[in-house]
Image 1: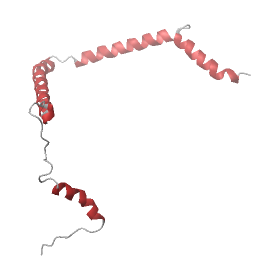
Image 2 (image 1 turned 180 degrees about the vertical axis):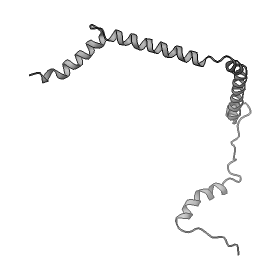
Image 3 (image 1 turned 90 degrees about the horizontal axis):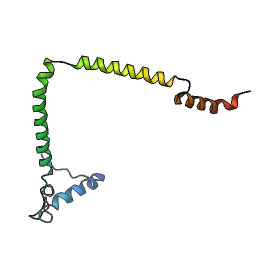
Image 4 (image 1 turned 45 degrees about the horizontal axis):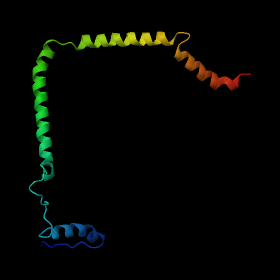
Length: 125
């Protein structure tokens, strides 16, 4: 009842590379290449492990940092006041920039006048 079907046509070509890989792995080529004894850790395939250990240490430091700072931050919230101060500073800077650029001899006005004069110079009649 259990009959194996052999692929025909283009499916044979699709499977040929896979079959050669499976058949050629016995004794000819080892699955993991042999490395000399004096090879560095990263060359032996431990680079992933090293990355995971370093990332774990980084996450533990972040956890400790936030566990110390978060209760203080929740108890003494300064987010709203800092946000309001920043908005006021931004508004003051905007007003200062507009006042400077609105003067008659400002570089901004000179640049705009040069652009308009060169663009509309030919249309005067």
